[in-house]
Length: 76
Figure (tube, rainbow, N blue to C red):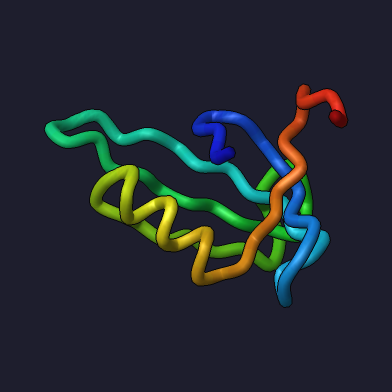
């Protein structure tokens, strides 16, 4: 599950260990900015990508093969 506006840590793929945050950008439809970095404050070795809608966001995560541990999630 992708949780916008919450910080997570990438647990798989070539980006393993990096932090990620997906920010919602208001509009019709809502678009998303995907921010990554090596530190939780998103100051170092980072980048960002924009996607046009939630379906594109899901496809982005699928293609990146990201499994994310979102902060505040309890393990099941």
